Every structure is written in structure tokens, then in C-alpha cells.
Image (cartoon, rainbow, N blue to C red; front, side, top):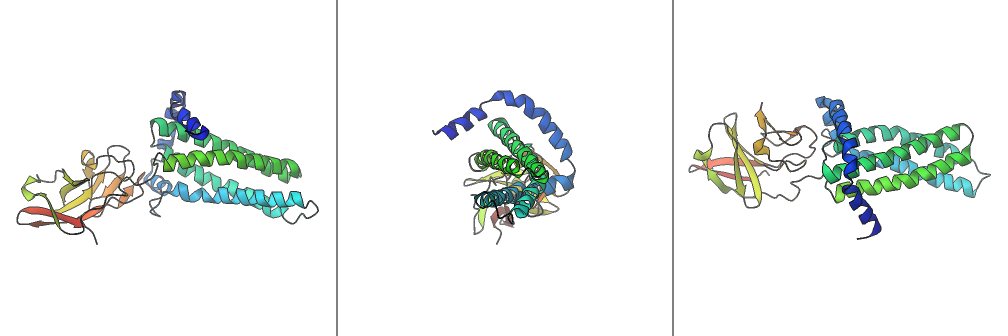
Length: 288
């Protein structure tokens, strides 16, 4: 284990952070409770997590500002790069606001070690944001050397935040679809007897390595992957209403007819299968 891995491992075990996390989580859930807000910050309109997309904007803007600041330092008599550097710092600050909001939404549904790392990730990025705000203020006050120094410091702190963000995504799987490698049958395959379905009650069926949720919806039989794409919750233990299933873990809601996400935090659709009855047996296959 290298030094960075060891440091992150210590963060994951730092239980003192839990006392700070719980009130922040409650406040975040209150802020994102409206369906429109929850879905927008989760990324449902685009079909991809919003936070990961937005982070490219402030990181890109501030990185280019550092490049232009460096150029200005190498050629102090050429002040042509200064307005562009200032604009990029300001653009990064503006983009950081919705980026942070989307990140807060994602973090509010994490727990334990992931929650702790996410809290430090947010704190580090907040420090970076403060340094860039101070940099912009110094630039506008004519104190350009101080403005550049603050921006370089901000970029260094931002790099730490980026490392932690990468750990959350690639090591902890935050906002990664938990059905990414679930591949259903391409041809019709028998999964259960039709008589095993009782009214509109959900039935959990194991087909190979894939758990399937099979039930009647509006007179027809539907089949979804039972593993919630958001965090792996068991959909068969959720609630069913108005043609949708709500995950019992974090409240993600999917349409039974096609698995489309109707309420975040889930962004990826639930894998949905065609279903038919043949000789009293229910058969399913992946939708083409």
C-alpha cells in the first residue's frame, strides 16, 4: 500500500467524521427532496451522473488559468494573457456552484467509509473554492502576484480533492451502475411457472447470476433486474405504486414497464426484459 492509499484508508476509518456527516445529510435531503431538484442534480435528464460531467468545467477553467498565469510570469511585460486568466478563474467559480450541489446530492446517499471520504473530498474542494475566490478578489484589486499565488495554491488543493473524488468513483463505485455487467438472455428462456405469480405481488427469481423481479403490471407480466442500479438495493423489497417500483434503500424510483428512472438518486435505467407466457411457463429475454 502506498502513502496515498494508506491516507485514504485512514480517512475511511475516521469515525469522528460521522458526527458531522449526519446533520449535513439531513439538510441535504431536505434541499433535494423536490422531485425536479432531485432528478436534475442526479442527472436523470441526461441519463448520466451530473456531478462527474460538471467537474470538468471548473477543473478545466482553473487549469487553463494556471497555464496563462505561468505564461504571464515568464513574460511580465506581456499583459495580454491576464484578462483571459481572470475570466477563467471567474468561470471556474461560477461553474463550481452547481458542481458542488450535484456532488452534495450524490454524497447524501453514501454511508460509512464512503461517506467519510466524501465529506473530506467536499471540505478540500471548499478550501480550493475559497482560494480561487480570494484569487479573483486580489486580481480585481490589482494585486496580481497575490492573485496568481492564491490560484496556484487552489490548484494544488483541488488536485487532492480530485484524487479523493476518483477514489470515490473508481474504488467505491459511487454513481456507478450496479447492473453494469448484468447481461440477460438474448433468446427466450424459462424462469418460472405462471401460476407462481400471485395477483400483483412481486416475485424474485434467480436466473443464473441475475436476480429478476417478475410481476404483473396493468394486466401484463413485466421483468426487471432486481438489483437497483444506484446502490444495489433489492427492488422486490420496495414499494409498488402507479406502475413504478421504489427502491427501499435510497428511494430511487423506476417505471415497471421499461425500467426508466423516474426519481433519483439513480441515473441509469433498470435493465428491463421482454416477458411472455408459453405452455404455462414465463419466459424472458433481453430487449432488442
